[in-house]
Amino acid sequence: MMKKFTQIMKMWCFFYAAATFFIISGFLITDSLTEDSVFLKNRLVAHYDDQFAAKQVTQYELSVTSTGFCRYKRIDQDGKIEYFAFNFLRYKDADFLGTSARGFLYLRTKEDDVIVQTYKDRRGDVDSMANYLMIIPLKQVEAEDLNNLAARFVSMRETLRKQQTQLSLRDVKQQ
Image 1 (cartoon, rainbow, N blue to C red):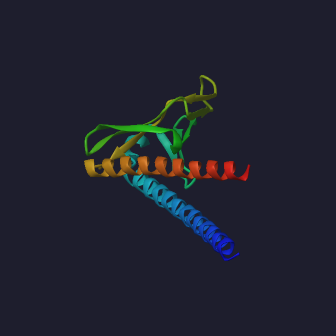
Image 2: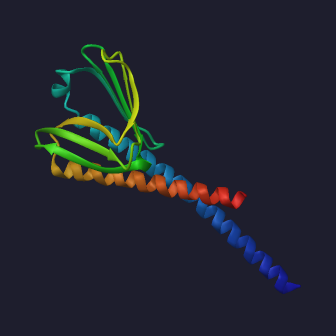
Image 3: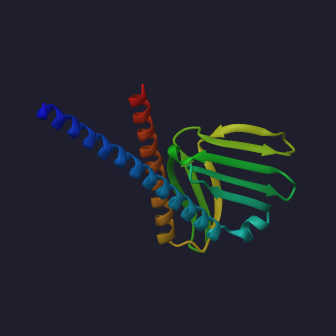
């Protein structure tokens, strides 16, 4: 009788320890995503080249959400609206072409995972998918800044993958 009671207690302790681990790791993942998204948005906006964009763009919105979405919307002087969005789960790599004074950041995805939409275009509205996100004009960006951005891009992708894996495991356990 005592052996059976001990086994049951061990199982309950293991269950509580596992549940506590999953709950705590869920909060850590969320915090990591929030931290990465805030960092990326702040850095991209801080280094955005307004002077280059002012020649063509009257208004822009650049955001990175804690759910892993990167969105870039710009409105040209002629009223054309371009919108680009992708999820960091599909992030592949980034390239920077230019100098530390001024250049362009290219973000790419694994496949045609980027939503591309245009409105009020003379050639017609477009709603398609592409394998690049956007070309973001940047200024005053050093190699260290680019390395930090690239590291956060990868960190966000990996954190989202871990979160997706945990959700998949939870779904399998529930079935």
